[in-house]
Image 1: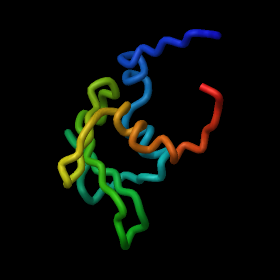
Image 2 (image 1 turned 60 degrees about the vertical axis):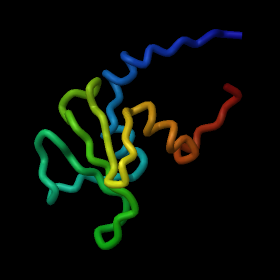
Image 3 (image 1 turned 60 degrees about the horizontal axis):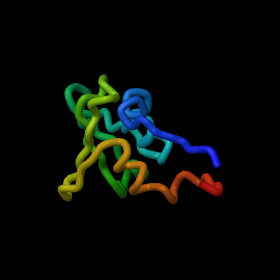
Amino acid sequence: MTDYKVNFRELKAKVGIDDVAYSLGYRLDRKAGVGRYIEMVLGDGKEKQDTLIICHPQDKAAQRYFRRDGSKGDVVTLIRENLNSFHVTGKD
């Protein structure tokens, strides 16, 4: 059996929270502004299902997110929360 080792620091530098959010169907909310923080929303224009506020949008390795309900994390946390949304199956 092959032993796969994952370097999470390298992963975070390559794949940001914004990349994962786009693949989950979130879109950039330009009305909220683009600067030190960006907001990404899930849902159509009328009804928001979820909002992510992402800090350090230009530095993928330093990106963190939080929600208005107080939950927060990094890209690994966001992936864990949404594992069932990626529609990828496998043995390992």
